[in-house]
Structures are given as C-alpha cells and as structure tokens.
Length: 140
Ligand SMILES: Nc1ncnc2c1ncn2[C@@H]1O[C@H](COP(=O)(O)OP(=O)(O)OP(=O)(O)O)[C@@H](O)[C@H]1O
Ligand SMILES: [Mg+2]
Image (cartoon, rainbow, N blue to C red; front, side, top):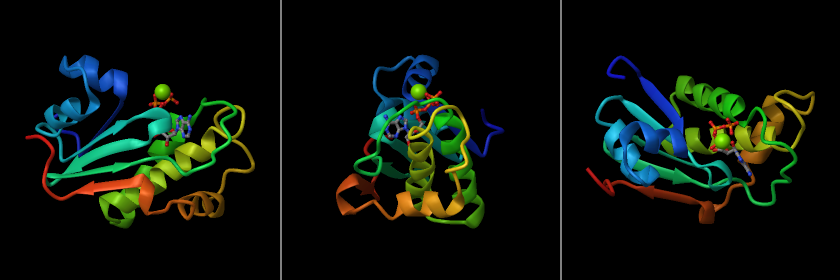
C-alpha cells in the first residue's frame, strides 16, 4: 500500500482490511500508508483524506437509482479525471461522485447516456448542503 498514490476502497472493504468498524476510522488508518485515501459510501457518497485534510461529499440530490453495476468503475474514472486535472479534493470527490451516481441511473456498466457533459451536469447538481469539508482532521 505504501507504493500507492491513491488507495480507493468501499466501506466494507476499508473496514475489513483495517479491522475497524467505521469508514472514518478506516480512512484514518489507510491514510497513514498512502498519499490519498478514498472510502466510497454507496448512496452516501464518499470520504477522502490527503495532506491531513478530510473531505466528505454526498451524492447529487434526486438521482434515480436503477442499477448500481458499474458505479465503482465510473466513480474511479471520475476521480482519476479530477486528480489528473489537479483539482482540489472537494472538486475531485464531487466529480467522481457525479460520475458514479450517473452510473446507477442506467443498467449495466456503460451506456450511451454517459458522457463528460452529463457528468458535468450531475456535478452542477451539488449545492453547499451535501458537502462537508474539514481542514482539521477528525482523527489522526
Ligand atoms: N444508491 C446510489 N445513489 C447514488 N450514487 C450511488 C449509489 N450507489 C453508488 N453510488 C455512486 O457510486 C459510488 C461508488 O459506489 P460504492 O460506494 O458502492 O463503491 P463500490 O462498492 O466500490 O462499487 P460497486 O458497488 O459498483 O462495486 C458512490 O460513491 C456514489 O458516487
Ligand atoms: Mg458497493
């Protein structure tokens, strides 16, 4: 794990590999071994830690959940996109979550409705109420 720039896991995976019971605790442990730690929280969005900053982002409001197949891959694609653009962790997490949330609106892992424009449209559905940022870490 020390060789990873980014380590991304879901809630169950993060708790089982660290032996703790909450994703926040798991994030704290994983972040000791990797530059950027991300824990995905399904319909509750995701949480990440980098440089001692913790960011938690929900999902865009009003997403019509049809099939969650592919959410993992398209969340990851959105995250890598923002990461490589050098965006802030908050913006990257929102974009990743917008991409993952779009994935649950169609059956299967890919669909013609998936596009950069559409992810941006979901990204713009965020408002200040479904983002939580903390400059001081919740836990060490
Ligand atoms: N019910 C949902 N509503 C909206 N967005 C969702 C929902 N479920 C998943 N997502 C989106 O997909 C992302 C990844 O989902 P999840 O946390 O389940 O990861 P995963 O378990 O690795 O993926 P998967 O379940 O596809 O294997 C979430 O962070 C969110 O952006
Ligand atoms: Mg899942």
